[in-house]
Image 1 (cartoon, rainbow, N blue to C red):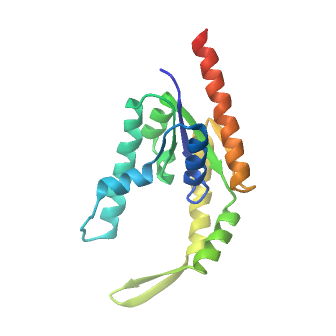
Image 2 (image 1 turned 120 degrees about the vertical axis):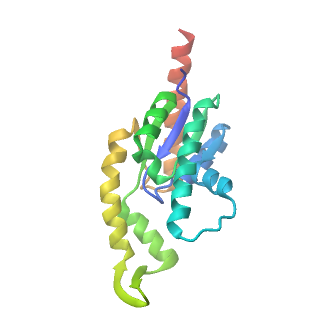
Image 3 (image 1 turned 30 degrees about the vertical axis):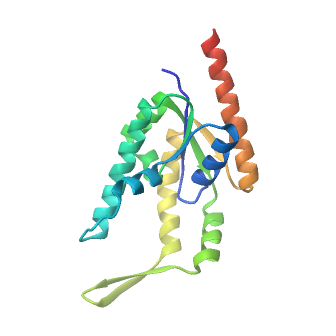
Length: 189
C-alpha cells in the first residue's frame, strides 16, 4: 500500500491546520481537517449536556480519520488533538501515511492565547455555589505535559513550529517533497 497521506498531529494551537492548509495549497494536493469534518457532520445538535457534543465530535473525528484509508492520492490531514492518542487511529495513519508531530512550545501558545482572550479562568459551581476557580492556563500546561510524550512516541517525523508560520510552512513543504520523492523512486524500482 502506498503511503501518501501526511497526518499532522499535535497539541491544540500548534499550527496543524494553518500549516496544513497553506502547504497543501502550495503543493496543490487536497487538505482535510478532521475537526471541520466532525463539525460539518454534526450539524445543529440539540443536547442536554456539553459532554454529549464533545463525545459526538470525538466519534466523528475518529470516523473521518478511518475513512482516509479509502481516499486515493496524496493529502495533508490536520487531525484533532485526540486522534494521535487513539491506538486504532494511529495504526491506520501509519499504514497509509506518515505521522508528523507539529511541535510548538506551550509557552508560545499560551502567550498567543492570552493576547487574544486575556487571562482565562473557569468557575466550577454546584447548585449555584462557587466551588473553585481554575486557572485555565495551568490546566492547559498540565494537559499538554501528559499528551506531548504520546505524540512523540507515535510520530514518524517531527516539525518544529516555533520560528513562525513562514518557516514552519517552508519546513513542511521540504519534508513532504522529500517523502514524495522517496516514494516515487521506490515505486519506479
